[in-house]
Structures are given as C-alpha cells and as structure tokens.
Length: 175
Image 1 (cartoon, one colour):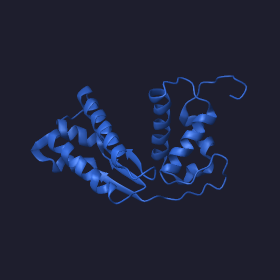
Image 2 (tube, rainbow, N blue to C red; image 1 turned 120 degrees about the horizontal axis):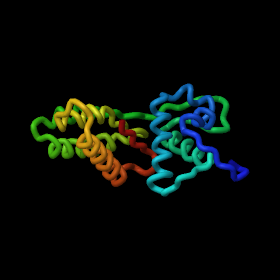
Image 3 (spheres, helix red, strand yellow; image 1 turned 90 degrees about the vertical axis):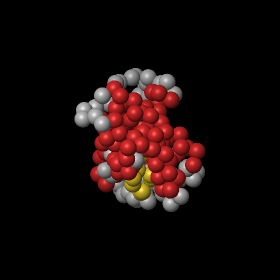
Image 4 (cartoon, one colour; image 1 turned 30 degrees about the horizontal axis):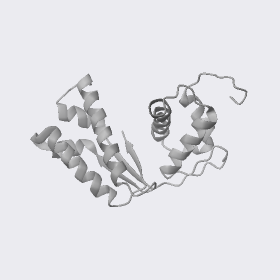
C-alpha cells in the first residue's frame, strides 16, 4: 500500500479491479494466465516476495496490451481490440510426430514455431500442452515425468520464440 502497509491478497482478487471493465470483454483464462505470468516474473525472475498493487497493475496492463488488448486500469470504457492470433494445437503436433516421440516432436515444434512466426502474429498461441505431454509419454494420468516434459516444452518454446520473434509485437501463450 502507499502507506507502507502490506496486505496479503491473491492476484485473482485484485485483477478485476486493476484492469477495469475491460475484464468483461477478455477471455477469463487469458486474464488468469497473464496474471499468473506476471506473478511468476516477479517471484522467479526478480526473486521478489512482495509486490505493490501498482507494480502488479502496471505489469499486468503491459502484458495484456502486448497481447493486443486495449486495457487501462484507469479506463472505464472497457473496450478491447483483438490482436491477430495464430493458434497451434500441440496435441496435433505430437500425433504427427508418430513413433519418433519426443525427438521428432521437438523437431516438428521448431518447424511449426518458425512457420507461424513468419506470419507475423501479435499472439502466437500453443494450446493443448497437457494432452500433448500425455500423448508423448503415453500416460493416462499426470505424473512428475509429465510435468518435467511440460516444463521442457515451455522452456523450448520460450527460448526459440525469444530468438526469432519480430520485436516486441508478438506475445507467446502456451496452455
């Protein structure tokens, strides 16, 4: 708080108030994932345990604007502009990898990422990561091995996206 007082609260509790009425026109999962990404950034990348509401609000607003949404924590209009979104189904890529499993999958994933980035999207959305991981591993239920492969895929996408993205005009979403 501006007075120096700290009050523990969840990001979900304050997100609606921070981005105003724009939350009504944005998919709730997108807002939730963006808020989780902002918290991850502060905690893991910056090593912070405490974040002010203003810092969180500014970071969330920047992320959502980077994804092509028009949000402003001070804006009461709630209008949003949808960005050009290109989706890729990770489950389909896993299926197309056939018996090559993870080795073929990562090769196919790199090819797909390069191809989609060539279309200059504002948002590059890779969906179906849980189904993809379970398919590659041959698991019926989520396990530690599944989580490890999940994390490996996300890191791989982030690393290759960072190397090839066209400036700050493209956001990566993996779910």
